[in-house]
Image (cartoon, rainbow over all chains, first blue to last red; front, top):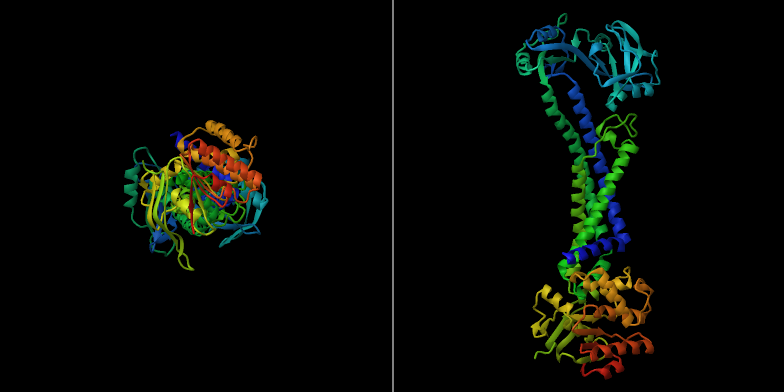
Length: 398
Length: 216
């Protein structure tokens, strides 16, 4: 054991003995690993935020399809939903995208009853919007800052529809635990949202909360509801689609995995390019390594002892490289707010996101990064060491 | 009793793009324990090659190289490494691990033998003193003169308490005074009962030898 520890120590010393070789290897490792760890951190952070959103939402969502494509849900369906035994409450919601202000800042409008605004949104200024079509808006703090508006400000023209042009008033500003809400969301009454999108009599979804223990029977009953034709129009019927919170939870990882998967494919490509670079760096100074291995063997070291030294050297380099990459990734995400990488996962976030990008540095990607680094560095190091160690010492020393 | 080293009709051919080079062609020699063999001859006649074969640093193209009666040419690599641990080899250019301090260089061969660092430092200090390099344990090999490097190489060869010393041109490129100091060391080692094999052009070393093998 003492012998192995002594050889391992020489591997550690070898890292310091060859600063150029070690430095080049570490540089390549950190350059390849840091974006990977940071990217996965953003993906995990977004997944957490989405999970929180789902948790704060309803038990069941009713949306509609026509021609197999998403379609607004006629409000005439609401009474049928409320009539299902076990439904505690059901209310309509409109979620849609608009561009605000003269700069056309993109925002997501959520039109819901005032008493249904999620508890995660906390007022920092102003008040809640009034019921009815009062054109009153409550903005996320970051969005308000981006638009340079305060409570009492008017946003002209907020929209144009069949009733004419409307100017809306900012009555409140909120903060939320979810940074994306602060940066994107506008809350308003359901009626205001219906006018804004010129879709009166429709909702994008119906949110249903169930009595305890009734969820399955409610879902079964809702799935039996017939297609509903909107009143007052000649449009065909809309078929209700029922989605539970669990369904969303199941979809969420798939959606995030898709984004993460795309990122990972890019990363694998980057790594494929980096591997030869890393191997060259790890095997840098091949003649020096060859001569050193030959000298060790000539003075009585065995081949496996020389290889063990190289293995420990690789292990130390991989460990230092992976740890440095995790530290830099943390700095990138926390100090520099995922500048440059958030846009991969959040279209529209741009180079420098205006909101706090959620992230979570999980141990698994860091460990995976370490394992991959170790495999590559040890391949580069051990291959060159093995070639030197298996040659006759006299030949290698010539 | 077996000779410690023996070569029987040894040939060593180096293959290269320019054609085969016969470094040794049918050389035979036996070195009894405690002997002092000087291998002499003009440059390029295979002195270094024969020394490498006897020291288990290379394998012959044909013929037998025996150490203590065992064939080295066909032996496994671990067995050959174990043989090398019984030998002290002094190389012509005294290659060192340049960034390691002298004491580490001297006792690096002892690392895989599990000798403690403290013991290695103590042994290195004693060996360095013995070869005339005192108080510079922490210096780097690059700070040494040619003669000092050669003596450092001898100190390293002695670190493992070898049964035999193989030295390749240990006094070449040294001034007379330094060369005499090195010769003195070999005299001491031989007097202490060690088998010594030296490839040399140095008439002083040749004169000290109990046997001489002339190549070429």
